[in-house]
Length: 92
Image 1 (tube, rainbow, N blue to C red):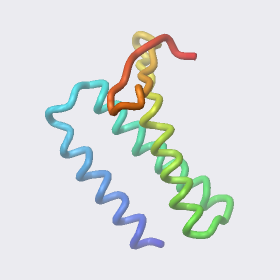
Image 2 (cartoon, rainbow, N blue to C red; image 1 turned 180 degrees about the vertical axis):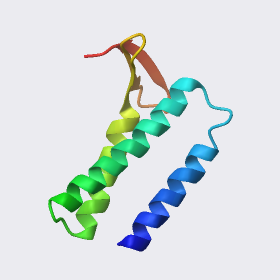
Image 3 (cartoon, one colour; image 1 turned 135 degrees about the vertical axis):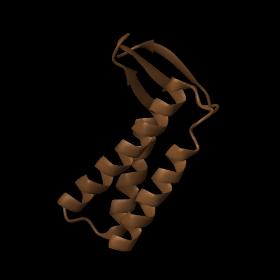
């Protein structure tokens, strides 16, 4: 499991390094996805889930993080439009 977590961290670092030409909103979505994956994986480990469930929880956390990213300054959220883009609206 330690090897898998190291690989996940390395992949996250490479993903963030590729964010040079992204908009601020896109960077926020990537960051939210990475944080969601981490929270999902840690939560599953705390609940003593097996490795398959840890990966499933990480994937679900990443998806949730990418679908919803909050702009604290304007109190707006970015929502996925289902076509690879996003739109902003007041947070629900």
